[in-house]
Amino acid sequence: MENYFLEKFKSKSKHELELIVANQANYQPEAVRAAIELLNNNHELEIPIPQQAETTREQQEDSNFGVLSLSFNYKPFFRTISYREFVTGLALALLFHSLFEIVDYYSNERFFENSLRAWKISFFIAVFLGNHVYYRFEHGRSNNFIGRSFSDLILLIILILSRVVYELILDSSYRLNLDANGVGFFFIIFGIIIMIFAFETSVALLKFLLKRVRCQIF
Image (cartoon, rainbow, N blue to C red; front, side):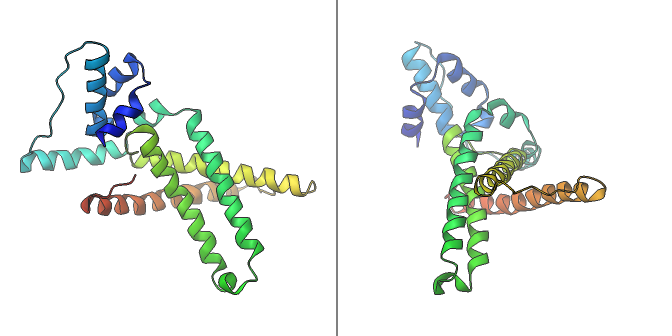
């Protein structure tokens, strides 16, 4: 894994590498060691490379308590947000709509006849999980709970807007009907937020299980 980050960070400037070292808590240990090695080799510095140390039970409990507070820290996400998140969201949205249309096209086939809704829900969940997986490989670190929630919201907005644009292209008479007068609009927004947090709670559980089996992919 460290070789992966060495290759990935080769094009980064000295300042970018120093930021990774200065914010070690937000990056994987392999990524930090790779950044330090590149700084030492390319910029003639002598920064000690941190080694994995054994933690005591008390330190582990403190660490577990700190994970909860870090899960709701929004700064790491907004510090690194860029056009890449939106381009990735658009690409995933186009992929989702393509799969959606393919399934609709073959909806009368026996294979999809009794499982059409299940396929669509599976594609929807897979797109959001894929967004988290891509974030980890793009940034070299896992996104936390609040960061994933913001990422979900961005992707959901892109999904909705791209669908509206698609419908407008197909049918110029298409209109988005949304009652913004009264409590209806509030409940729609509130429902979306609740669904995102419920989904991310499930993702957090899945992430915990993947860590236990040493197969963390996001």
